[in-house]
Length: 164
Length: 474
Image (cartoon, rainbow over the protein chains, first blue to last red):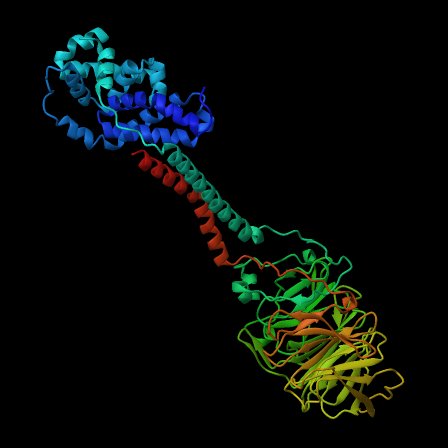
């Protein structure tokens, strides 16, 4: 159990910081953005550490995803359009490169749903709670995200097919 | 190839991680403190705005009619304030036309200690029990009085008398006289006064009898008095006394030829006998209309301000000072023995009556002393008016041993006359706070703007904070 003081907070950052950063990286596809998201969420957690120190991860994760959705809402008419202009998917031999390129073709919301559902292993209800949408929206967004991956990255069809 | 779950883990695990800041705890706590400070500041601002509205709106709420009694038995107030801001310019006509909402309902005022006439403007009436200042609209009060104490309060503080006029398009249509407000019932009774030529009488001075059962008056039957104002004085002086022993009120009315009129003064005793002092001749009129007059001997000059009688009715006291009408006698009072022993003879020239000048302690020549009456313990109560703009008006008493005491003073240098309830002059004066004058239009506008700001402010602060947080998150 983490303590309610600075030591408890630093212990949490040391043990869970990397995992949170990886999750944030999958959300954004950018190291610097991921770092900003995680640091902002951790600063918010430090501000109210006395109240959340018993289970801080749920709070921090929700902060990260909420901030990312907010960022996406602000930038969807600019950055997202630019991303749609990215030329064809890199069909390199490395599947990680291919998956990263495919994720970049998704909207931030679709990407967040996939990360929460398949990386964080959250249920539809938990995912809906984190993103502040209804479970039905999570379900339909998951379906749309996978369909888009199949459409934009046919070479990942086998991987996506086993998932669905 | 693994499934999507494993692929995502592979992708995340393979990426290098950027180091997290080592000062997250300090920055997070500082940010939290900053947000808390912002909320506290916003709350203070909102509370300040709400407080300002409450403060400004205080006079919007009808005050307790009774107020807080500071002197349940009644007393004079130590200070008489005059309205400030736009309320200082409110005219009686404005009240009559409904463009302002001054104090109405005379019975709410209760017993009055002091009345201050403000020619053309709303008079100031000071409660004897609470010291509260009222701005009543006196129906049809005249606005051209320039002499004497035209709005007066009775010795017991339960009546206010004032000159009234309803102007017509011609002099014959104009009605004028004396109105009396009964502060117990709120009723306003009027006496219409006309001269021997059936033209209205313009009241110049009012004076109460020692026990307040009679009100002496002095006026002119005008030559012309129409909507545009009165044009000139008539050939005679009218004097009389109103009796408060029945309804409707009735008044006697006597005529004195003006001759070479200089300064004059009038008063009445408890039986209704009217004394009129014009220059250096004293007239007396009884209820039955008998007239006698005496030449005043023993004083060299006049300059009368106002007159009053001792409680036993034997000593007529007339104030002197710089009135601009007569030969200055000095600042003080003249005592005239009007006992039955001294006033002998009847008819228009009954000999002489002795006058004795008594200087008022410590006053310069430019001052004037206007006797109002005598206190229950026998002290003479007088309003002392300084030279214009030099000092404040004061109400002073002079006891039988000659000691002078100041009871009340005005908070300004205006020379608007005062009248006081002399029965209260022996009581310790009350120190009432400066009044909240009724709401002005500007104050209403300011209040509306503040209320509008109070409604918008929380929303603006919320939006501001939300934007700050969004920027921080970005």
